[in-house]
Amino acid sequence: MNTSVLKKSPLFETFNENELKQLESAALPVEIITGDPVFSEGSVSDALFFIQQGSVKVVKAAAQDEQAMRELSANTVIGELGLLDGAPRAASVIAKENLKLIKIPYQSLETIFEKNPAVGMKFYKRLGTIISNRIRTTTNDLAQLKDLKLKHL
Image (cartoon, one colour):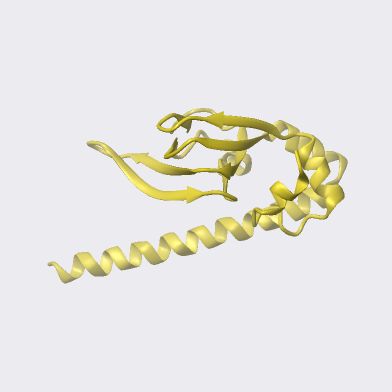
């Protein structure tokens, strides 16, 4: 794999060539066809995925059905939460179209970070920024939803 592929992700954009090669050593190519899950809500969290090509929908089980939460496309990282807390997958991710993914098992990341703590620190700092941005977006979405519901009362 060419390290420039990972460099397209905001998670890896600050990594130098040597750091990217270390991460690349753990990367596994995965292809998934339209409609198939990348992973399912409640399943074991054991890897993160980089969407190289294609798009996915993130769905969450609700009381009566599934709710589409958002859509994500190329150069996005998914499946990162379990790396932080070890909890099962918080949502399902389904291929909206044929996907080319890069899978990086958590255990492989941990091994790289133990050997090179500076890479681990850079990774977790970038991951924190990405998750923070997603939380801000969710907070704004919830505020807009609350405003909408209040207008209809």
